[in-house]
Length: 218
Image (cartoon, rainbow, N blue to C red; front, side):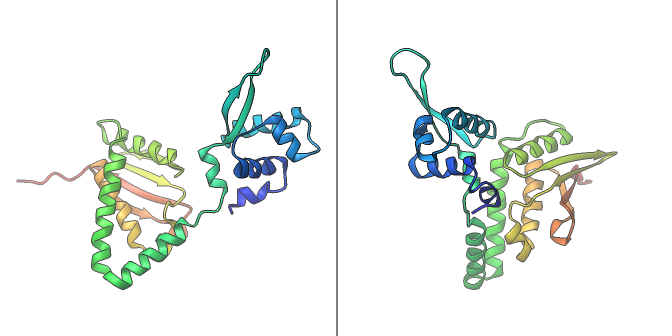
């Protein structure tokens, strides 16, 4: 269970989350009946705030005669981040099993293929011809995936900063994951990318220096 979920576990918002998780879409009157002690207006206020946060969405509107429709509400896809997720534990255990059974060379080869696949997925979303524009576009893509990023441009050096690691638990044990990310970025940006600062070394974020590829001299 995430810390965010625990933080309002007993609050009205937390109770609404649990009710919608258990029962699916519910109307205001259904929620008020289950909650007890809250008026319809109070339930609507909670739902309005939760919709603003992107946790709840309107599932459907039902009309019963004249007057405004009666809405039913459900959890959004974003709300999944509130619940327990053991993806990192699974990834780490799978990685260790692969190492034990197949060996480091095979795992390194597989990492290269995974990185290339990720590069293809990201690359389809990158816009711009100039390298700086592509880096900024890539930072926006990362932001959309929940990886807080920004870009610094100083003279001929472009630096992409990431402030949270998408593979934190795995990279903390297997630093070759960082190398995979570095190579993947090089493929996405069609540039030379070097990891110059890593949060695994105690920094507040990771910094990737991005430069144009050196053209070979004939």
